[in-house]
Length: 141
Image 1 (cartoon, helix red, strand yellow):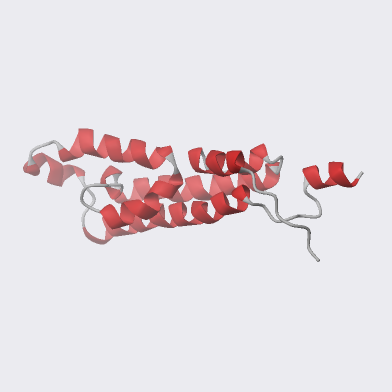
Image 2 (tube, rainbow, N blue to C red; image 1 turned 180 degrees about the vertical axis):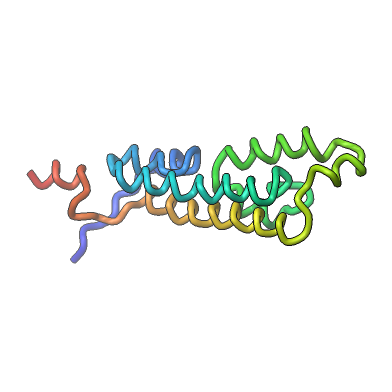
């Protein structure tokens, strides 16, 4: 029988606050750094490809549900979009936003990063018993 999972709400919250931070808290440095690099790569690549308006809670609410799992960085990007782009007159706004497929690809990258981080949050919240986990080694000794 596998040992029961022990849940760590602090690690789950930290995993949402900043991707990879929950695993760093659990002393899984390599896993935490790989998660951090992967999810932040998707997030910032999405912003570079699709523009700042790829994160738009008001106009793309269903996409923002997935993007929100990237953590507070998604809310900051949305806030910047609302302040810097969405409040401008339409003529200026059209010159600043990503149009068509480029914007959609950026939105998709950021949403995929958020959904991947959801899986990471759940893994940090209730991690499976891993034989090489540092806290398991200290308990076995």
